Image (cartoon, rainbow, N blue to C red; front, side, top):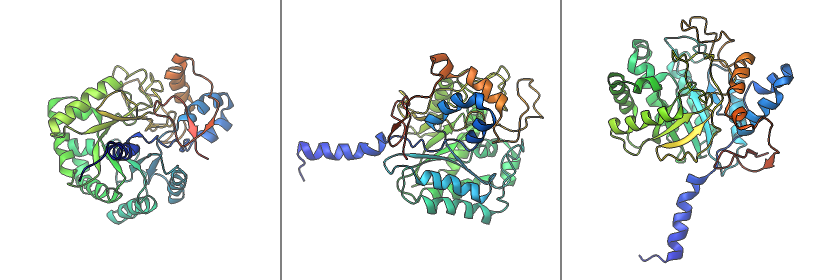
Amino acid sequence: MRFTAGILSAILAISMVKAEMPICGAWKGASYEAAKTQYPELKDAIDVVQQYGSVPWYTDNQGVADQQKVIDTLKGCDPNTKIPIVVYGIPNKDCEANYSNKGINKSEQDYQAFIVRLTAAFPSQNMIYIVEPDAMGLLADSKCAQDNMYGDRVRYAINELSKNPSAELYLDVGYWTLANDAQRKKIVDAVNAVWTPGSKLKGIALNTSNYQKTEKILELCDKFATESGRSDAKCIVDTSRNHKGPTSANEWCNANNAGIGQPPTMQTGNARAAYYLWVKPPGESDGTCTEQKSGESMIGPDAGHFFKEHFDLLWKNSYFVEKGETKPKPQTTGIGFDMLGQNATTRV
């Protein structure tokens, strides 16, 4: 069969549509509206953050009604956008620190129902799934993850989420597992063990809820791709709190020297980086952090609750304050935020 130049151009254009889709910014944070009422002095700063949208967490740390609220919000996304979401529901998650293990999923059956409820809501939409933060890092380096069958749970989630032909999956990997040779081999082996043939896994998500600089994370992403034998692997980088980089002790729990980072974008300027996203909503607590020994954490409310003092810190040290962009931009109507992550638009 011979193709004319016009037909070839049309085929190329169709193939590029999904790659160029903007990212839906419909999720404005579960805690922000109440925070603006309680702390009116933060309204402008929170409005700036909300213009870009963050990635919602579909988690069993919330009740079913709150899970449904996430689903309902994302079902309002324009069909011509990509829809990011974190899936975080393994029973007995966070089995070492135990700050985020208050979920309602207690069994394999609970977890399966949790996943099926999500896949039923989004059978064919253009989903960006970030799969199970903590799980792979703990699976590679902790007996408790093996005892709680994290590998089987993650494999189940990958297989079910991959039934959506338009989905992209990124398996969350703790950045620290790639930081030295011995740990890197463990995490590469753990990821390859759950990377089932035919799945929609595109790569890994790094820096979730952490503070490492983007440049460092991209170096680790390259190392993962090389050592895993997956030269086409891509990465999502969580830039939500990495503008200042980590503390001297690499504190992960409500770090006391952090700033909101580069806004979400798919125009990363790096072939290895699929997206920069705000996976951790800035200002939502990492946990109470009462057991931290570094002297570089801030004691806060339970994980996921708005933490005023930490938001204050993140804002003062933010990308936006450095750039002088401290007021919300005039709203325009559209389907997501633009490719450069510089102009927030909202579908209503």
